[in-house]
Length: 442
Ligand SMILES: Cc1cc2nc3c(=O)[nH]c(=O)nc-3n(C[C@H](O)[C@H](O)[C@H](O)COP(=O)(O)OP(=O)(O)OC[C@H]3O[C@@H](n4cnc5c(N)ncnc54)[C@H](O)[C@@H]3O)c2cc1C
Image 1 (cartoon, rainbow, N blue to C red):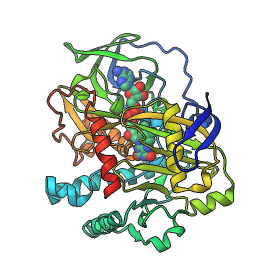
Image 2: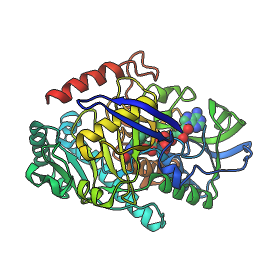
Image 3: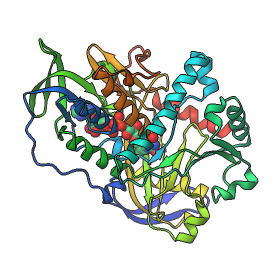
């Protein structure tokens, strides 16, 4: 619990918020991280998976159901990374839009890659239904709010340039009709994507965890991998709990990728994303602010994202609020101010939780899966990873089993790095400053 008695918020009316908030994800209230007894690390596994988030567990489920012996290790508790910290907005998002992606990779490749985003959204919906995962998955639709008239026009143009197969479920909303979507005058209208969804990320992770365990997967927390070496049979992996040999290894560490896999570390850009949950608000106010229960994002480069909690009692609000990474005591009031800029009605509303996590970005803004030097991997979902990590985790698991179903349009695409980049994004601060200015003038 962080005591936050005297924090002044910038603005014309300086405001004192007196608040005690918990510095852990709101989702952990309902679904604490799984407590497990001290599990012994076996000497050998057919497949060792590093990382027990959505990617690692989705891969593990496929591989174990394919008849292989699977051990998943995590440096922390299972799901401690992004997979229990996110905003629960389930999208089809491949980051680049169709017009800009096709300018880079050609129309056919762009179509196939964006199709994978839509496949991922359908895949997660089907999986949750088939496996009866109780995680408040709802097709609420997403509202992408335009922060300027120019951005509204750009969204409209982008939608018109998008193939009908992808644009059919989206439509523009004029500013005059915005109150039907969102109770604010802060935006210039926006775009609704009706198939996008929301879920409770902690409960979804718990569902994957239980399915994996039922399939025979051994999940070992607090077992950080320090080093991976090739040997006669496959790999020898040194961990905090000793050594283990494995025939095959899957790297599922995304924004938390570290020194144990230096090739991947050079290709992932870890960027902190910060969230707050508000205290409970009146139902009538929630119905006014978020009448359709959409998940919301905006057109800024330094995007904010928000939604109501599954019980519609709180607002969960996220974004990036500083040039470098920042303590929660600093990020919480800044997020609160951004939220109040959109919904002035919430100026006196206290924060109940504040937390952050590291999103795995990539240099080409695309997620990547494949194998390099015998290590399988799937990572770099660029902030839209709930559906992509689940789908691509499953696909990499199928590829490891040699199944044709595992093929995707993202397979083995060049996974770029930059000269001298070793996993510490020194360029982040200047980029954030540049985007701040850009957001003001576009
Ligand atoms: C604040 C926030 C909000 C987000 N909101 C959304 C959203 O609304 N919608 C959306 O689609 N996406 C969102 N995301 C992104 C999404 O959560 C991630 O893309 C997704 O969870 C990635 O899953 P993963 O399994 O690949 O990685 P993670 O869940 O991050 O798991 C990686 C795991 O690897 C472990 N690990 C790392 N190194 C080692 C090692 N050496 N040895 C052992 N274990 C190791 C870590 O401990 C960690 O548990 C958000 C992310 C954050 C941080």
